[in-house]
Image (cartoon, rainbow, N blue to C red; front, side):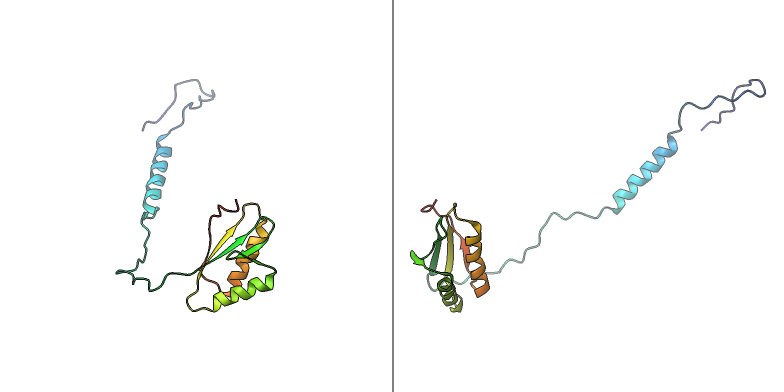
Length: 143
C-alpha cells in the first residue's frame, strides 16, 4: 500500500481527488463472506431412508375378490355390471364390503366424460364407510 502525498502545488489550491477506488478491502470482505457461507452450509444427504420388509412374504392363501364400480358419462353407477338406482343402495353395498374382515378390492372405473362430483361422491362414500382397498382403474369400455 502506498500513500498519496500529492503534488507540490501552490498553497490554497484544492488537491486533486483520487479517481480510482481501492478494491483490496472490498475483495477481502467478499472472500470472508464466501468462506463463512461455505462453512455454514449444511451437508447435503442424497439418500432416502426406507424401512423395507425383511424376508419373503407369505404366499397368498386365496385369490383376491374384485368389485368393479363403473361410473357412466351421465352419472349412472354400476356395481359389477348391475345399475345402482340411488345413493342409499350404494352405501348399503359399501357397508357390506367394509364389514368383511378381508375386504375385496374395489376398482373404480369412471368414464372420462362424467362430472367429477359424481366420482368424488363415490370415493367419499367409500372412505366414510371404511373401505380401504379402493383404486382407480383405466376404463377402455366407457372411453
